[in-house]
Length: 387
Ligand code: CAA
Image (tube, rainbow, N blue to C red):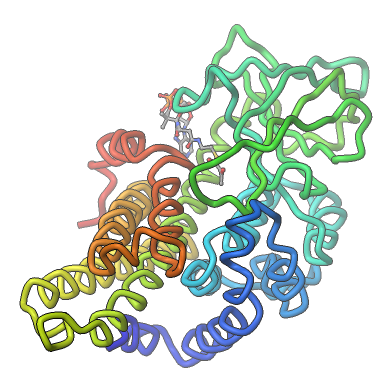
C-alpha cells in the first residue's frame, strides 16, 4: 500500500508526473549516498548536482528568471519526495526557497533579475533570521545595519544558518532602528564574497548531518542601498510573511521523512519472521502501521491544503502554514519512532535508515519556529480561519 497513491489525482496529472520523476531521481541519485552523507556529516554534493541538473534545486524560481516556475504544491512534492530518502538533501530546495521568498515578495525587478537568475543557475540562497540570543523571540535580534550615505554597514552575527558557507547569497534581517523593536528591522541581501562576511564552525548535530549549519558573522560589511529588500522597517513583517510560505516546506520535509520510515517499516514487517510467521500478521504491528498510515495521510492533506493557500495567498495562510508544520512534524517524530520500534534492534542501528530518519525528524519540530511557537501563531490567528 502506498499512502499517497490517490492524492495527486485530486490535483491533476502534472503533479503525479512530477512526483514520479522526483521519486525516480531520488531513488537513483540521492538514496544511494544518504547513509554516507549522514555518517560523514558531508554535504550531499551528488544530490545537489542531480537536483540542479533536473531543475529541482530551486524550481520555485519563475520561468522569466530561468527557473521552473513551480507552484507551492509542486515545491512541496519535490521536497517531500527527496526527504523520503534523504532529509539533508531535501534542505537544498527548501533552503533555496526560504532564502529567496523575501526577494520574491519584496524585491524590485532589478534585484529579482540579478539574484533569482543566479539562484536558478545553481547558486544557493540562505536565510539569516536567528541569533544566539534571538531564536523564538526573533525580534530581539542585535545584528545592526547603520546607514552611511548610500551604504549600509552590517555588524553582528546570525546563528543556526542552514547551508551557510555553501550558499552564495543570504537574506539578512538586521535592526536599523533598535528603539522601534520589530518595526525597526530591515531586510538585506548579502553575498558570500562581501568583505567582512565569514562563517563559524560546523555545528555537530543529532540529525540532518549532511546540511551544513554554521554561524554567519558580519564584520562591518558595507553594502549599497540597492541590496535593501523592501522599505526600511518592514523587515520583520517580511520575515514572518516568508515563514508563512516556507513553514509548509518543512511540513513537506517531515511528511517525506515519515513516508520513508513507513515504507521501510511496512516492508520489514512482511519480511521479518518471528514465532513462525511475518510480524505483520500480529495485530500489534498491524495497528501500529495503520496508525502511521492514517497520521501520514492526515499530515499530507493538511500540508497540501496549506500549499494551495500559499499559492492563492489566502487570508488563513498563517494559521494553515503553522498548523501543517506543527502537525506534520509531530507526525514525523511519532512515525519514525514507531518505525524504529517495528524494526526492533535492527531499527536502532544504521543497517536500516529509520534511526537516521528519527534523528532527522526531531529537527523538523524545532526549526522554522518550534512547534510551541507554531501553536502561538495558530492561537493568534484563530479568528482568521475561513470556516
Ligand atoms: N505576516 C505579516 N506580518 C506579521 C506576521 C505575518 N505572518 N506575523 C507578525 N507580523 C507582524 C505583526 O503584524 C506585527 O506588526 P504590527 O505591530 O504592525 O501589527 C509585527 O510583525 C510583530 O509581530 P508580533 O507582535 O506578533 O511579534 P512577536 O515578537 O510577538 O513574535 C513570533 C511573533 C510569532 C513569536 C515570531 O517571533 C516567530 O515566528 N518566532 C519564531 C522565529 C522562527 O520561526 N525562526 C525560524 C528561523 S528560520 C529557520 O529555522 C530556517 C532553517 O534553518 C531551515
